[in-house]
Picture 1 (tube, rainbow, N blue to C red):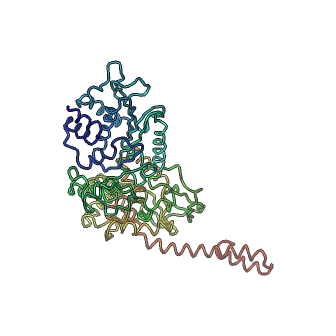
Picture 2 (cartoon, rainbow, N blue to C red; picture 1 turned 120 degrees about the vertical axis):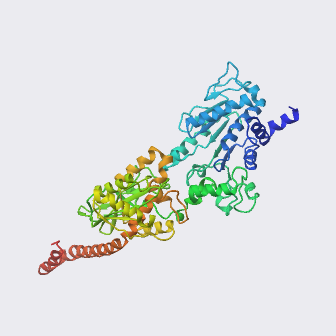
Picture 3 (cartoon, rainbow, N blue to C red; picture 1 turned 135 degrees about the vertical axis):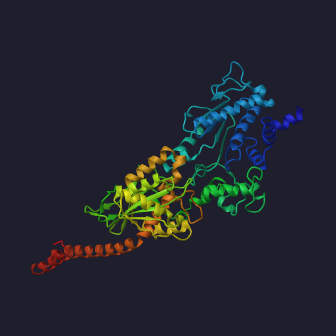
Length: 557
């Protein structure tokens, strides 16, 4: 190699990246990958670089560590990933580069140096406690390590940022990075990642941030000055920024598969979707309490006060959107006026056939149970629904007729008659854009605090989500309720929420009538109490019998 070529590789990371790609069998870096290399060249002190999924950030980051060691063998590099196994994969790749890339072979660890899967030294480095390269998972042991470069590679993933509590713990872990830096060496902390939550930790870390979305955005202002100028130079809005790996037709497929919200988050890197106005359904408007199968409280009173927040249940919604228990519950319990099971049928694939069981009492809707199955309208799925109807003793079953022109209802009827003969409402149709219909049917009763959810069921669902966050979170009712917007395909899965909307729509007239009656009863009671407490005590004896008679006619004398 000519000395001039060697000098260029050592001084230019983009050129070095292309050199390494050629020696490990990869095609030349794409323009977007070159832009990533330019941004982290040579050694930014602090940086968050966000790029869409599949851009090769991890590969580029791993190669960058070898370039830093080529320039200075005394560098101490700590690569932190979301998990221990992922960190080991990165370390294995980095170590192999010293074997496969000619320019790095002189740095291979010597016989008397550390050379393990999780840490190794490079030849020519000074003796030190810290290895030349070490890797760790973000939840692993990083306290006590020392580094001149901390490379945080995709430390945020769905399974560690799903809830408000998880995000807080993740931020706390990342704050330890500053304490790991070696005082007497030039230091860098670089994050390479893709936001996994609309409340991504990358928005909360006060580091310079550069954002490289998959398309030229329509409104650059949503990135609040963090959008890289290079993006806007690629063409009009909608132009792919990596035409090699992600041409327009591929991006269209990804959006169709992920839904609008998921695509905007992980490909457009737009986290402004957390604007409260875009997410009209909120957990804080719910009333949450343990519920009985047969009876409910005559009255339930809502309070949004912090003292009634339920903080011990993991929050699947946005930060601060906590569940609330009632501040007052009637000691008088009554049988539900009606109990229904609303069903949103599904054919097959990843969508669910879902159900929600709702009881009606005193103008409130008590959401007793919900769930789903990916087995479509198979006999097994239909039997599960029939047994749930029997378990809860529902009076009516309301399947959405739109599916298969009523075919689901006819198939279900044959199973149901054997298990739990019950009325099926077979003419209930839902019309209009799904997202608008769902929100418009749930929002009125939710914001009026007339939806009471079974606390035991919420706890069960949260435990189910936490058992496998990546697979289950988008199927949970609490997640769907808090993340739906009016945009088409804003959710990848909305089946459980749709079943709740069907139930709310079907029961709307009962809620309205009962609510008016309840308000009138409350006003009458308040007047009676005022009359008794303010007038009766001061009234002459001859008038007390008259006032007492008013109360006795109401059964309160």
